[in-house]
Length: 343
Image (cartoon, rainbow, N blue to C red; front, side, top):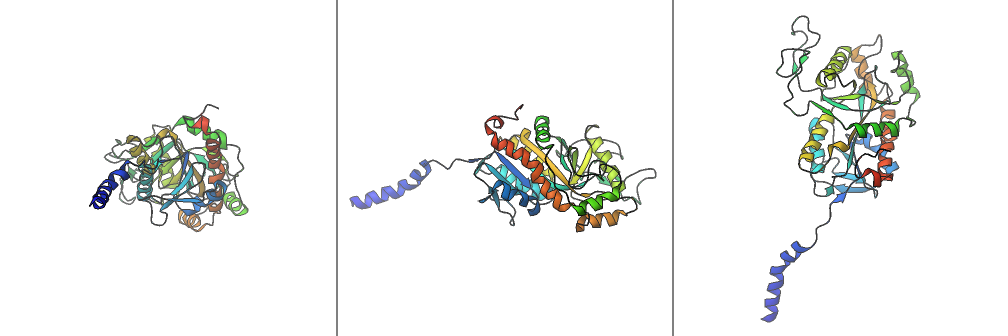
């Protein structure tokens, strides 16, 4: 009887004992690199020795885990497009597995690039993130006479009128101190280039499109439509100026960055992350408009088939330019952990 009583008591106490055991402390990360698809992730894996797999509920089925190293650096593949980027980013940011309050986030992805701002392989750090997809649209064949474009702000009367920001993703400005530090650390890195990209960019004839790639600062525009051509390119430039009150300069076009920012903003509101620790790097994999004598359609086909030669060097330059920032953060964590260092 005594034995049965002790067994019953032990069984009853087991859940309470389990609850009293200390939980595993959340993993502190120094840097989280955010890639959109596998070719953007690959250049980081060997240099940073990202050998550990850390599964996280809510990630893409094709990429269900972070890749991490022993130095506090992890990489996540969030998926392409606004919806995938936001969902995956929020899954990591709200996961109890991690302590991200001091983590630096680096969005590192390829993009189309304005030939007036750079060339294939160019590494551009963004100050502004502008959402290109939130707009009214009229087919060009039906828009009012005299309009240059059928795209204009939601609940406005036409092009050139700044819309009221009601979606909370229209425009975001990143931390200036981190931007300047990223530029200073990466400005003189040797960027990848190759003969195929050189031959194609020579068709653009004018600098900077015709010149070798370099590290620069100019801003990025996000939308899920893969647009292309001179007319839409002019609209992209004007839209960027309009939404930033003239402060931003359109440079690269991609799909995800405003969505990723918004997910991190939600996490910041929950006390999980610090948006001042977000940097955005986009490298030019293709031009967003044709060279002289080429049609917009032919230029788009060259971009999607790799004929412009920029894809390989753009993915490589993510790690070359972005790696300068990551390595400095990790190597000097004592001065980075409390904020961007002055020196």
